[in-house]
Length: 90
Image (cartoon, rainbow, N blue to C red; front, side, top):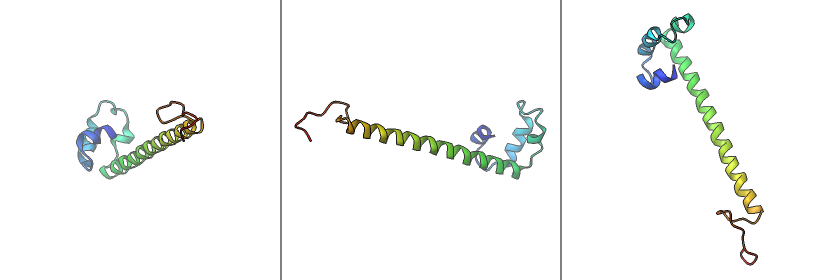
C-alpha cells in the first residue's frame, strides 16, 4: 500500500483501490481487495505514522550514540579528531 501511494500520490484513494484490486500480489487477499477507499486511506495513514515513528526513534538513537561517543572521547582526554590532548592544552 505504501509503495503504491508513493507511485500514485497521496490522496488518490480511488486509484489506489483500483490498483489494489488489479495487483497480482494481492489476488487472494480478499480482505484488502474488499476495503473501501476510506478504509484504505485510514490504513495508509496509520502505516505512515508508524513509519515516521520508527524513523524518529532511529534518529534519536543515532543522536544519543553520537552524544555518548563525543562525551566518552572528551572524558578520555581526546579531541574531536580522536587525538590525545597534550598536558598543557586545556
